Image (cartoon, rainbow, N blue to C red; front, side, top):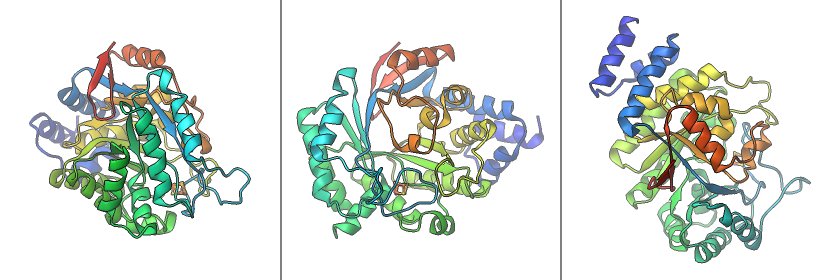
Length: 359
Ligand code: SF4
């Protein structure tokens, strides 16, 4: 083992925070197994032998979007023949149809629709919450919330209050992309900036609303951008804790305007999981989002620091628009088998990490 790796290993084992330089070194090092071993050590320290999953229903309300992010295969113009918009009744029926699967979460994200006002989103949440008060609603990325605030001329805090009153329990981690505003101007100029995204989460955390966070990697960003992204999240979490899980998302080029870029390698995916586990010492969970990583890599990621494998999503549209080859959902039994085969304890959780049961 190289001296630098030994030094980092010492730091991790003594609970000393890793530096930017350490993060960049880990990304560039060739000793994948040493990196995995260290990240697994940290994972075991944080969550023991548990690997978490939940049972949820994704509701993607619309694919009509003004943002036109270059990395997206989901958002469309209003007049595109594939465009759709669920009415609150459609959304209710879509959600209600999954209740008998034992779901504990409605996961609602969509797009930046040119016309829909906040009332529409409130109505969607209210109906589901009133009919199924025990099912947690995790809804709307910080980018969407920032857009709702702009469009409805309300403060971010007010939007969050209105959504919470309607029944929203927490917010997901999407829309973070990569925290480099030059890249954002190039790839998603109409979306919240780095500071705006972080501001939504800061306010949510101040209000006691739990959130998650993501990073889209494998497009035009550098390794330094990735480490800086993690550091910005770590900084916010130090000041205003509230992130529950970090979810690294590999860029899926198919059907996007960046389809010339190659999909990240398995090595890059595993390194990203491991480095994030080691750098984000104040975020409890690292999620291997199987629907984007695909199941075999997600399973391997459990040896590289991940302790959560997301949900047995009943059906998902956004990532599938970008050509992911995974099933649109897997059964709870399959999820349990996959975790057990890796030597961990399958642990079903709710959205805010209360344990529902182990198998
Ligand atoms: S990533 Fe989201 S905001 Fe961007 S175009 Fe796609 S749906 Fe719209």
